[in-house]
Structure formats: C-alpha cells, structure tokens
Image (cartoon, rainbow, N blue to C red):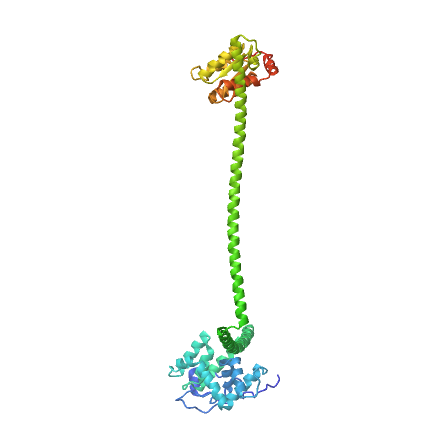
Length: 449
C-alpha cells in the first residue's frame, strides 16, 4: 500500500480500566483504538481541537459534506476550491482541526449550527447509559452525523463511550462501503450537481441584478426622452410647419366633401336603378295588357264583321233576294251540339242555324237539363261548341273527354254571344267541314260507352 499524504493515526497502548470492563464494552483493535487524552472540563462541551486527534478524521468525514468543506477550508489554506481533490480537502480539514486556531473554531461553529437540535436532545442525558441509549436510537433510525457530533462533544461523555461510538461508526462505514458503493457514487454526484447548481444560481442572481440595474437606467433614459419630446411639442411651430398643417387640413376637408358627394350620387344612382326596374316591369305589364287588348279587339272586330254579314244575309232572305249567305254555309246539313250559354242568345242561334239548313241541339250544361243526357247527345254530332264564360268546369271536362274518345271536333268560343258563334262558323273552312262530314259514324254505345 502506498504511503498516504497525511500522518497515520498511531495506536495507543492504553489498557481498559475497570469502568470499561463494567459497561460490557469489548476492547477495540489497535487500528481503531483512539489515543489517550487528558481529561477535559466536564462542566462544558468539549471543543473540536480538544478531542483526540484520531477522532477528527471520523468527525470531519461523517458530520460535514465535501461541499461545505470546499467553501470553508480554502479560506484558511492555499488550496484551490475547484482544482483540489476531495481527499486533499478532507486532509486539510483534519489538520486544521488538530492544529486548533481560527480554522478549528470555524469548523466547530459550523458543526454546532448545523446540529443544534441534536445537541439540545443529548443535553438531556445525565449519565453514560442515557448517552448510549440516545446513540443506539440514532443508529436504528440512521440519523448518525448529528448524534455522533453531539455525543463526542457532550460534557458527560467518557472515553469508553467515545470508543464504542467510534467503533460502531468504523464498522458501519465498512458495511455501508461494501453494500452501497453505487449509492455513494450517486450521492457524490448529487452533491457535485448541487454545488454546481448553487454556483449557477449565484451567477444568475448577480446577472439578474445587473439586468435590473440596466433596465432601470433604460427606463430613466426613456423618461428623459419623453420629457424632452413633450417640451418640444409644446413649443410653437414655425411658419412652414403651420402652412403645411393648414394645407393638410384643407386637403382633408376636400376629401370629406368628395366622400359626401360620392355617397349622394351613389344613393341617387341606386334609387334611379330601382325606379328603372319598376318602370321596366310596368312597361312589360302594359305591353302584355296591350297585346291582350289588341287580340280581344281583333276578335271583337271579326265577330262584329261576321255578325254584320249574318244580319245582312238574314235580311236579304226575308226580302226574298237571292244571296250566298257565306257566313253560315258551313252549317248546312250539319248537326251542332251547343252546351252552355244564355237562353236568349241560344234561341237566336237556333233560329240562325235552322235558317241556314243546319240542326242545333242546345244543352244548358246541367242547370235545367240533366248532365246524363249530355253524353248521350254527343254521338252523331258533327261539331260541339261551348262558350267558356257560361259553362261549368265539370261539363267542359266531360265534353273534351267524350269528344276526344269519339273523334268529334269541338270548339270553345270566347263568349255566349251570337257574334262569337257566327265568327266561329265563318272561320271554319268549307274543306275542313267537308272532312268532318266524311268521318265514319260514331260507334258510341249508351251501355258500354
């Protein structure tokens, strides 16, 4: 084994006294046996420098962390806090505790402040038995560093008690080192990480302080600039600036006036477009009404012309003159069914048709005549005529259905007047009427239809 960089503890030749034999404490091996020290004042707690030199290594290594030693030891030695190894820091701390002086006082003060609660708990002990009982409780719960420091410096602690605590700690260190090497490495890594984090926090705190000062300076500069700009704004503007301001205001007024005009013309244009659309709709309606009126006028004129010719022909026939009566030649020898109409006009129509050599059968559509007779009267007819203004819808639908079934020509007229009937007869071409007369007789059956 290589020689360590510090002085090894020399075993003491002290023999156990009768007091040690009475407590049942077994004699320790020479390597773990502390040297004999002079008795200290039992009225006060022992100082770190007053303890046996062989105990300093266990106290420093057990009760203080490497991070705490790195902060304290470089203050009293030439070691560098970052470059020195853990062994060098520990060795220097043990030497400072053995030498005494300010460094030993600082270590003692640090231990007292850190383990003040354990010191107060051990102060209640009155003899060795109480101290050993408190020490055994600390071993069971694993809270060893506070109990070890409080026991080693207690006023009533005797050498056998210190030897037992030292031996328990010595063996416990062997057991812990053999069973929990990974935990120790992890603990060391955590301590290093904790120390690095603390240093980082300190640097960040200083950086935050500097940033706060820079922010305050920037705020003060900005406030001064704001005050300067406010003072400049309160000063009267030069003549050029005043002219520019007036020109800008004039342009703004013109722009506002132009916007108002555009809005006015837009509203007028929209109103004109709406009126134009209404006028177009009205003109279209008037055009349709005019076309309808012209058609009715043309039809009325044709009816009047036909009625006039029929009247002239009837007058000539009454006077004995020979005439063609072209207006009613188409009804000669024809059987005409007239459905609907008015009684007065129907009687006049019947006289005109009979005077022209035709046969006119009148059916009122079901007012007085039965509707059942209508279907029976249609077979054998040449023409079916009905006014659309004097016939019910049921009779008209029946007429259309029966006439289409038996291929009978049917013609609706505009009104039930004589003029409408005469105009219809004049419109029918003689060739077309001859074709109607050549049709095959109806095969209509009253029973089977």
